[in-house]
Each structure stands twice: as C-alpha cells, then as structure tokens.
Image 1: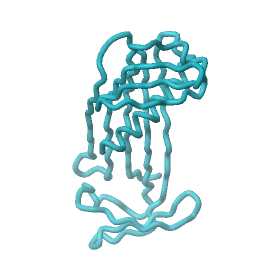
Image 2: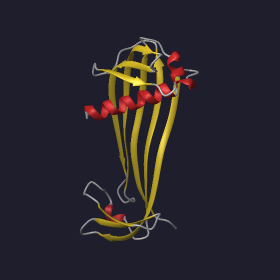
Image 3: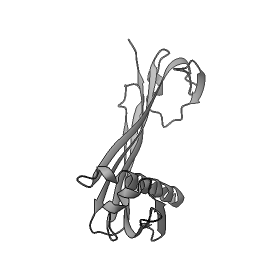
Image 4: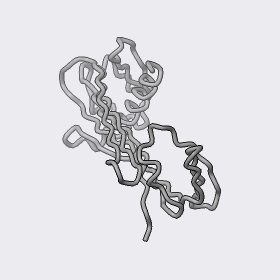
Length: 184
C-alpha cells in the first residue's frame, strides 16, 4: 500500500506542478470519469453469475459474490452501469507539515431495489517543498513518510509559482459506482 500511495503522490505532484499556471487562487480541480454499460443476457441465480453484453457486442460472464445484495432482483434485459471516477483538488499552502489522511464511504442499494453500490476513498496528502531547481526543472518534496522525492515539472515556468517551504496539498477521491437499471 505504501508503494501505491508513493506512486499516487508522485503522480499528483507532477500534475499539480504542471497545472500551477491556473493557480489564480492557488487551487486546481479536475475530475476524470469512465462509464461502461452492459445489458444482462443471462442469469444463473444458483451459481450467482451474470452474462453481460457490452456496448461493443462482446459477451462477458461475471461472478457475483455474496456481498452483492439483492442479486435476485436482477432480470434478463436489465442494464448494468459502471462508473469509475477520480476527483482531485490541489492547493498550495504557505505553512503546514507533510501529512496523509484517508476516509472512505460505501453506499448500497436498499432491500428490494436493483443491486447497486457507490464506494469511494478520499486521500489528503501534503508534501513540503524542500528545493526548486529552475535549471533542471525539478522540485524536491518531503513526503508524509519523510522521504524526499524529486519531481520534474512538465512546464518549468510553473516552478516560479512555488517557494521553498510551501506545502503542496492534494485531496484525491477515487470511487466506483455500479447500478442495475431496468430499461423501459
């Protein structure tokens, strides 16, 4: 998990430095989303499997574990909509300390409804700017784990917007929402 947090932190830092030009109020926000829909072609309630036809016509068979509530509410012809998303808010702060925090949320369909879930996890990561090298377009950041990461800015001009001692803060929310719908 520490490796994935480190990778996420490095990626978001690069994004924040490449996007610093829009920091009129020292904040940037973006959201990425991928949606996939598939129609239920077959259901085996005993084996808890669903055969789906994707938008490009491919048939896919999925197992639904017992954590899938209301499985018996599914019907052939229903549409399954899956949405993966990531929202990022990046700010530059003048003071503070490197830190890492997480929060998670899970919402499930009510009894009798078509199956569905919306699960998300939010990370808040703060890193301290230790050094800025305009000649090499690099910045050194102290991570919440105490390590020092050297990041190359995509746009070297953006490095002029931060100073040694600033805190780069990123709030990242990642999630997935899956919902079964009856199309009329």
